[in-house]
Image 1 (cartoon, rainbow, N blue to C red):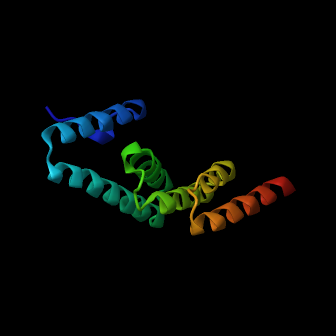
Image 2: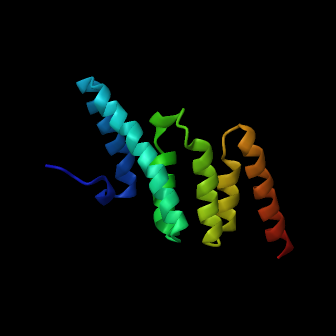
Length: 129
């Protein structure tokens, strides 16, 4: 029996990811591990495609739930871009407070400085209201 990942409630997804990882490790197949990384890559790009088409709720789901919340992807190349693009989605939806938090959560790298400046700028806009 197959269950679609997207049909699972949000609270069940982390357990499903962990179970999938255990199966992949148990099978010891490099191909399975490659699929997990490939899924992360595809999830990030699907999120960007949704953002560009104006479907911000789907973009947030693809980026936050399927890219950023996977603990196995600590060294994922999409972490920096994920936080930035999640913040862009939240900002486009009018959720400035959420966008500020997403910008501030960016990991330490050269791009994180720009994210922190953007968060500070948004906070200043909110403070003027």
